[in-house]
Amino acid sequence: MKMNQPIGAAAYGPMMIRLTIGAYFVLAGLGKLNLLAAFVDQVRSFGVLPGNISAVYAILLPYVEVTVGGLFIIGMWTTLAGILASLLILSFVWAFGVFPGAHDIFNKDIILLAATASLLYSGPGAFSIDNMGKQA
Image (cartoon, rainbow, N blue to C red; front, side):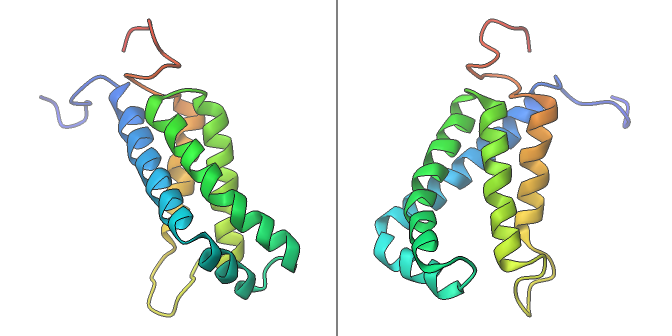
């Protein structure tokens, strides 16, 4: 094995990113759905969006997260899911900033944004509905 060569098929890289981000979004969305009223109040308290818009955003966000995560997991409409995920993450970065807390060295959302954007360039990878019937 050469140390400058991949250890496997290139299609497995995007698959790993897709499955990881998909699980992240599904779990994040389900967590918000369990406490939706409290989440709406929390989003309103940030004061980033006007009252009614923040409520609509907070109500729709968990459903969009679960949907986008599910699309990533099954590898369906990966480009659309990547665009939606990137827009969601951009909204988080806009709301909280690149350095959101005094003790945070970096915003994890920047890393998630890079990962979702990478799927726009690489495609879904192996074991996806989008690539069903294609070689890995």
